[in-house]
Image (tube, rainbow, N blue to C red; front, side):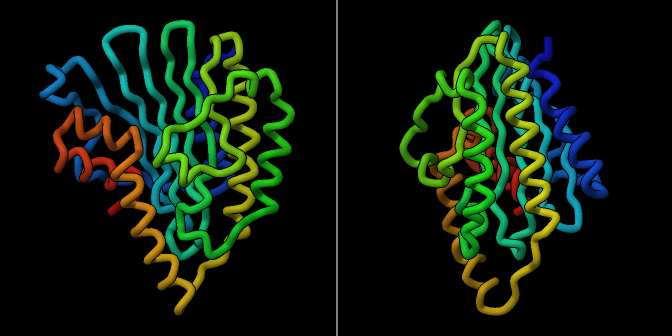
Length: 232
């Protein structure tokens, strides 16, 4: 039986087949144990970039008992006006919290990518057992989620289905990225302004940013999150 712990290995394998990757040196390197957590929590992971990707994040957060978080986040370079791809998988004993989506407003939304999101909906529709566990997102961050979001709390017996859905979503996303062409001029300036507003939504509402603030303090926590996930 497959385990949710295999998910990021799957992601890295798919990316390496699709494009050359370059490791990124972070402002605050991994691994790290936040002093205010008395060294009980460990952040680790790998960060890459490519010709079209500003960040490809494969991060793990190790907690002292029964809990591990796998954050997979793909942030294209802003000029490509692509959605960001996000997956959060939390291992909680025999339970899993699993979220996968492409945030439609990530790069400003100049392009709508309706065909892409319809494809994700078609994929999601084939995982009816997973979708029995669908949860509604909290206000704030829900404003950037797409209609194709999968956000579930599932038993470990459904790990294989979660990985399969993730792989299908990620494959579709990488195929979309392959065809992306950069914007220029006024169109580029427009999405830059929208992207700034998107980043503020992330800082204000994203659970990952809130966690970083708890672990590292407000200033360093926000700096870490924006450096890791967006390179800003």
